[in-house]
Length: 231
Image (tube, rainbow, N blue to C red; front, side):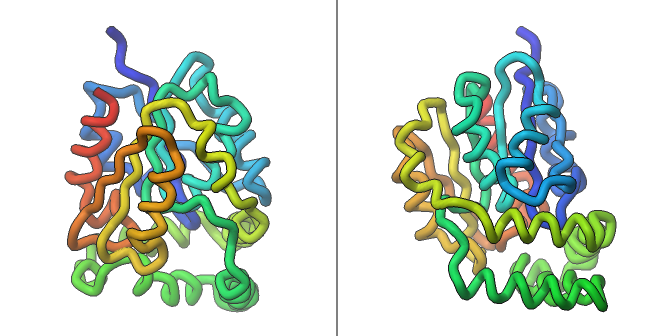
């Protein structure tokens, strides 16, 4: 059998580098592609971009953080095209007023000092132990700078405007993996547990010693979980 087509959806200020270990490590099990989610300013538009970049036939879909919001919209629009779903460090809830206020503050900062946005976000994206590792911190910073200010502003507008996906979770019928991280301060385990509980038959896995950037902080563990999910 040919490898399963796998479309990976990166999060806010992320690019293909977020999934470098997974793409390399799953090469024998999946034909991997990482979508570019930098052009749309609504989750609906980003889902359209993802579907335009997806294989024509059935494919597996994995989304991290913002990529998870996009994946849930893809499931609403084209459920028959997705044979497996993986949701990493994400949730089904709409933005809270507090989160929206913080996003707008960062958007204002981006207009005058975009590199400072990444510097402010970094300590909340990874655990303190991983923050001290130059390779991990460097990867997150490099992705943010490569994504750039204009794409960041579009992505934040999309995230602020996202709908509450919880009422739609019960309609997801494909095998689903939900991955949480014990040290993720942005997406606590209980929110991922809620997400998994809403999807029939979904499996929740919790990665220890890890923050929000699971695919970078604990790359081998994420690759192992995705391999089991694909098989």
